[in-house]
Image 1 (cartoon, rainbow, N blue to C red):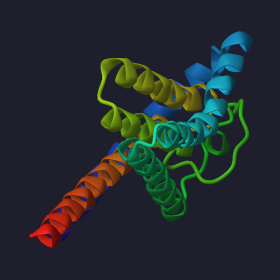
Image 2: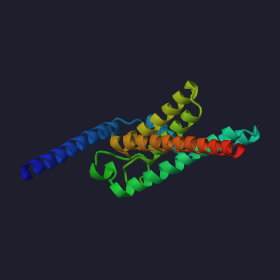
Image 3: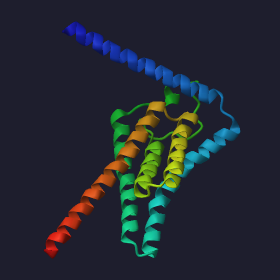
Image 4: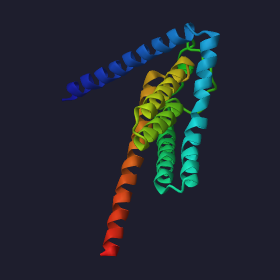
Length: 204
């Protein structure tokens, strides 16, 4: 039994090491083949994350208020709520996992953006996918879904291109962000059904 445990543990460590080496090679290649124009573009995409993510629920709320549309305003609350959930989960995971940034482990990976908190998961990606998923659930039209996820996916790629996150950081950020939006959406659905049931009971 002890030997089996040692074999399983060794296999896990070896698999993790191989995966990390593969991720480092990807980032080394991206770092080596950067161009000034593409780097500037990717920095710009990364910088849009906070602005778009905050502006989205604010804009939807203003539209709802202007039209006196409670449903539209409710959608803005859900989108904002998903951002709060994504931010809390992301920041918590960052300090629990405490993964070092790629450039601290590999001198061939040169960051082209400022480094802040720990690497896992990617905060920019989490927020971008939270926004993209939340707005897609609120307005399930192809012309909303397609550009939303194109933007979020580009944000995720930009974090790798700039050498500040591993691919697994970005993947985890996408999962956390999308999951946060889905959770917020489902909680809102539950709450709306509960309120509707309550109102019907009061009428009866």
